[in-house]
Length: 390
Image 1 (tube, rainbow, N blue to C red):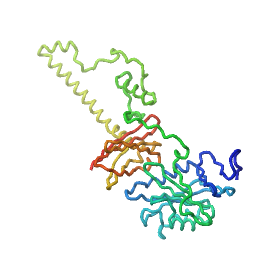
Image 2: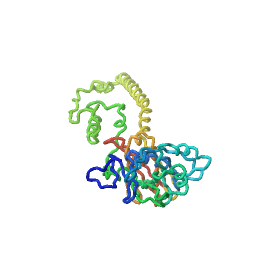
Image 3: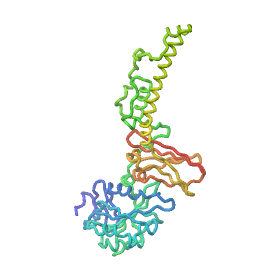
Image 4: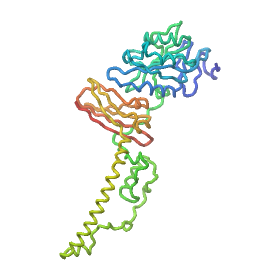
């Protein structure tokens, strides 16, 4: 074991960078788990959370790592392996004789140092089935068990269990938040105002056509782009003066002064009819181009849709969104705003909760409004709103 750093008291496990140290004063064992492992494991444990309004199925598997004996002994959690369950006994992570084969293979790994699962039951304690698995596959004195209790609107709560006098305790001696932000003390990212406009699809899709330089739409895009800090490539300079009117050719279908003077005579209707015919052909060709380009715009809109939906199983509403949507997969955070009785409540969502794709809300009235905003990259947000009525 490496000696303690200068000024570090004896009996305290030295902390590696970006690692959470779980250690209880007076206990001879400490657990080191990298924050990157916590991030990845949170996503796996939240995948099934919210799938069932009554109780979500649990997820579990094997902890992978090593043990460094010393004072204190350090259990290094370096990775994990999720082991599927058939749920023949309900949503709990328990196995029958018929479906225990996958865990038999994973539990016999040489580098397996413990067992983990999400805990969607009451409290936070090992079940008799958990103890049976631990005693059968992880009989060494310094193997550990990890339970994580997931929540939809706040950080999950976790606890390690380590044998004391050959037996696991009934409750974990130390619970801790199972999310990087709370473990490191990082400030949550600033939430964007509700009054800010959603970005246009062409800001997220660089392949979409840009307006003609110098036009009114290009100038509006330039000022709006500056307010959102979007990249300036392809846009005119913000303060560049528009080209003079003489730079734009007069439309081919405009009626000239000479033509207007001839309208006073009767024979002018023949050439005027020809002008109208040419104008109609031109407009029809332009309309055909517009309708031909519409499927591409529809495809772009679908690509950035969040597919927000709500299902009702009294007294709960389950809010769904497409976790495979490109905007969701690219986002590290999001905000779900819930408005009921005129009161709006923002719910911060981290990457694990976004990847879960669902959130359960207990409603009190017959009308609830939801607004989901995700942030696929800095300065860009995608928002979708929905109102549920009974």
